[in-house]
Amino acid sequence: MERGSSPLTTRCPSVARLLDQHRPHRKLRTRQFVATLQDALCSAGITAAVTSRIKSPCSARDKMVRLGLGLPELQDVCGIRVVVDDVPTCYAVLALVHRLWPHVPEAFDDYIATPKSNGYQSLHTVVRLACGHPLELQIRTREQHRAAEAGSAAHWRYKATASQPGSQHGPDRPPSRPDKPPPPPRDNRAPGCPRD
Image (tube, rainbow, N blue to C red; front, side, top):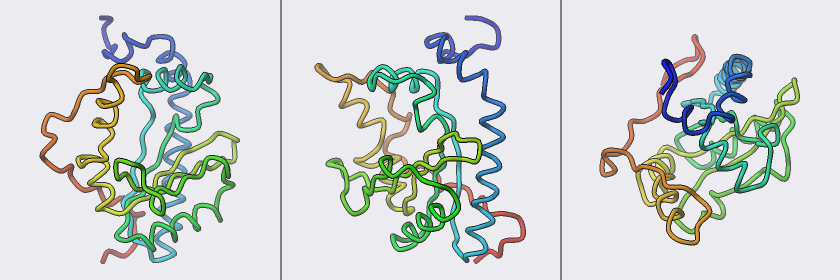
């Protein structure tokens, strides 16, 4: 393995190079989005934990192969997760996000009203940033977040089940302690936003 490279980079080098070319810009755009969203949530009196992520090279490659897409066509290379206290607040956050940024109607999924078969619940939407790039948001309650991270709807469980014969997905490793619930998301409200 090259010095400074990770196992993911070594296993998915071409996608890693493509992601790395624009990583600083993605990080900057994502930070700006999070700051604007946190300010808007604070102004609306909504308490939320906001986190962000950039898709790993292998996850991006797997999705590109599965859907027959190129990297520029993936709408979830960058993602934001908003975790709130209750379901009505999920929909309030969704409305706020759709007022602030143009959304991609065909990329909206309401898994709260219609949960997935494994019990997964979350609102998914994709918005377009001013530069035209897509950004995926997942909006859910703390309870839904715990189920998605460690419960029956956990992503690693889905991937492990999907990696069985006949599946198009590769195996993922479960967390080292699947019985231990994940820590709650950090409270990333904008500075000066009142705490409860």
